[in-house]
Length: 157
Image 1 (tube, rainbow, N blue to C red):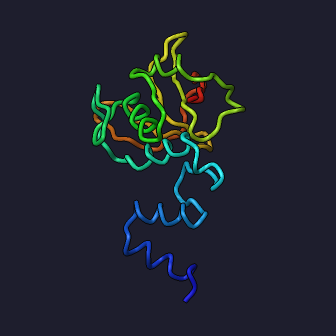
Image 2 (cartoon, one colour):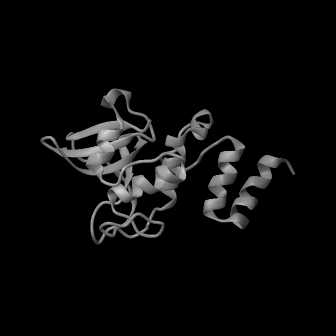
Image 3 (cartoon, one colour):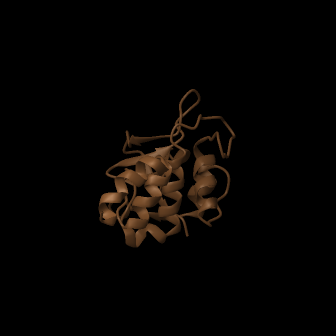
């Protein structure tokens, strides 16, 4: 039996989270929002993977994990686990990032939702016009299509 043939049975025995790890180590990342093997080592890609691993965690205002999150709490937690420090609120996080255009955005960049000049929400860009975020009270961390053009992008330094 080749190593390739053993991966599915390993994935079944190891469970979903471990299956993602096995897939990543094998060179292919099979979950939405993950980028290529070359980018897998970057803090932004690690933060994206961490946010995705929190899928289904309940929203709680003011929460920074590890089991409940608000929007900026999820980004703070994810980047902290990836070795990068961010301030607490979405607006503070926007002010600490390198601002980039939509055409230059990459998976792992932060997506900031704004009304006029006020930032009110943040998530982590997953590619294909989607983001991982903790939407609102009564909801859970999830992958969602970006629903508005009133967004700015920031790259964590």
